Length: 57
Image (cartoon, rainbow, N blue to C red; front, side, top):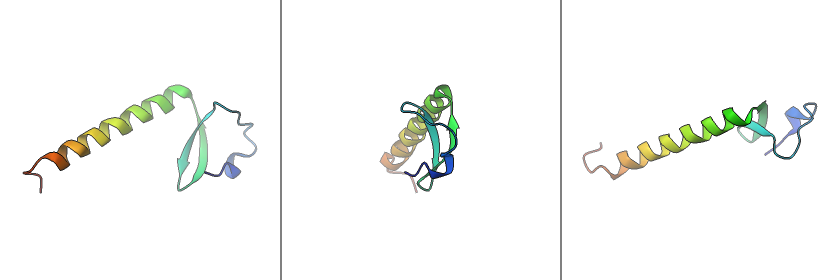
């Protein structure tokens, strides 16, 4: 992951960033990062449930 686009943001170890196609594009608050991770886990669980459903087309 490249931090090049945020080189002027003063990023530090422990900061959270939004990544798109391998580039950090925005620094985000820890709360937003946590919420995004939770949503990602929910989507993954739904996808896994759909794939496990034998009637799923």
